[in-house]
Length: 451
Image (cartoon, rainbow, N blue to C red):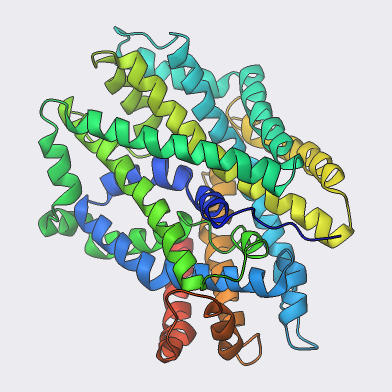
């Protein structure tokens, strides 16, 4: 079966960035920034994107481009004879499945809120209790949540079933373009609100006293963890797009563009949220509730708030759905590469399976609301496995494979990374890639388990 390729470099950049851009940028980044003291966290986050995010992304893309298969078969093609690196391919596939088991529900929340603002179900004059009750009512309404989750799953696999170019690439181009336009419009509006300056100061001007109050160590660890989470590294989600990409550009150049787009969306999301919260005197240290309870309350008190709420949750829907279709493409490719299925058959299989496996997360807020392990509900457990285990462990495996003599090896990785035009990865960086990145990744893993 002939392997598909992207129609254009722009398509590759937008689809890959779309995979990275998601709830990690527009939901998790703002509330972690709020909890971690603001601008000092942002500085460390940018630092670790350079030190950790970009190198690991280039390694994951290198495995994909050199192997020209989904993760398991790519490892198989590149690993030394007698080694078992390809076993990590199964963990990559499992990671994508577990991620979608709860991500589809969160994406459904975004879509539901877009619909509620669009149709006027969220109305000015609602008090704080009514706004909070809307979210609690949504997630506990089993039929409604099954419908929103089902729309996300069905539409995502339908788009992917049309193929890489006609489905994933074509839709992502329009969706990502709309997302970038929407985010700029929303940011300009938030910054122009009265009394928005305090929010901008919190977000953009480093205050080390505030960071010390939170704990500088906690701020640094949160920034390291976010640098992995926001780029979807470690589960092969990026590797699959490496297998489709051309050899015209170096991987360092392509990684920088993807990360630049991803970071732009994360940073501008903060320019939407923090000035708006400042304008309406809302505490930004609200945690996960910031998006679904605090911000809707802000929009409902704005002039033309229904319009701004609709546009914001349309942006949120695009951001989350871009990741959904990117990860679905990874699963479909695994079915095609590992079992020789047609794209239609693989799409149908994974659609049915992901819908079924997403139901426990939906049930976790209604009929299985009392279920908990170590105080964590179903969504929190699934998120813990992905964020605290599979992402750092997977990133560590990709790093060791690309730098170890018992794996693919640094020289072969470097040759692949530097193939094409653009910025080259220097050979002198070997020590950092071989020892520094694995050491920091282990620190992230241990801290995530302890915390």
